[in-house]
Image 1 (cartoon, rainbow, N blue to C red):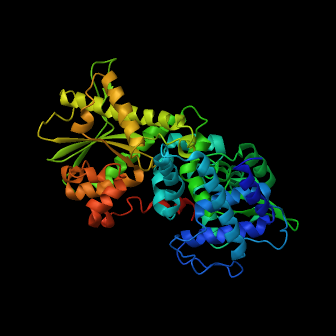
Image 2 (image 1 turned 180 degrees about the vertical axis):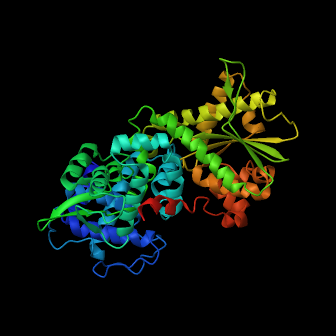
Image 3 (image 1 turned 30 degrees about the vertical axis):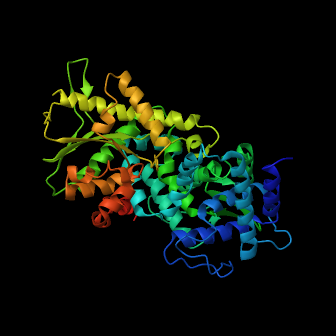
Length: 501
């Protein structure tokens, strides 16, 4: 045998000494301690005084993802030699062994040529865990998924409406804030939610422990993506197991359940061919609702997409226009998310470059429609040379830092595609584009409403902000305004639950 498998084998053998239940309970405690305010840490789980609620001490939640995967794959119903993750010394030994394994993998795969690519992988692995779960996420994704057409697809494929999935998911996650295990099968005490609904929900988001082990085993490989690919436990964050003749549901990392029934619902519906068009249209509508709420009471205007041109050869304007007396912002909405391989692979860049090419297409699409506006073809907005022009691409998922070399690859692809379209690559300097996640856009729209379009983008092209995420730019250039931003969909959570009260 050779590295990294030798080091993995040592790690695996330590995992094999653990029991499922103790391990799930301990990881539930540590993950919830970093995710839930005023969490009542269980007395039977040891924690070191250095482990603090700000998440700056190990074990980190992204480390626990890997440990959960290995526990399902290699642990047993009973522990051996008294080993338990509830004991701080045993937990520390496991985490240190994982770190040693990652170090060995990095020694074989990391180089000066891909170190910045590694930073992108780390961002996608760690940044989501550094933001606590909140009703903001529920509000955003419910707005997108709850369109009538998508709701019909959801009920067809899952047996549940979007509202029921969100209601049951929210309720289950709420129960898991105070307990690591749920008795199964659950029985409903809520009007409008049947036992059959609960069964359909758990069928969708849970898997029997040994069946999950088989799924992980099929995907398992100790390579450059080892610590970054947890697709099986993300798909099935609820784990069904049996103890003492009773059936239980374990959820070692409840945040994974929260992500699964919100943004992760996408993967349950993607099999339906009509889904993608409806999903794109609904996301575009959501962006319009963000603008309606954020710009209310301000002097700014926003215009929706329109058709123009001769019959049979019509074209569409940009998805949304935001304007005041200083500038006009061209907002293009894209639901494209970075693929799993792009977020996890280090040795191969093929998947990442493919995704970058798709994003470059969206960028070029914006410049094409700007050219139509400048030619005076927009039906409801005459070209005004006095107004600055700012292209913006809003993505539903966060792509995280696109600095060099990813940003360089994106600009290279955009330049090539602009040239092929008969447009000048100089447009990238003349009118620099901005990429914003939906989460960032909700805040950006509120800041723009206060300071105006031109002022908001004034410093965005400065050298000091090159490669920065929009969130970082706003926190530096508009710190006070960012702090004043509110949850635009604050009432959505109550709206979801209202029919079941």
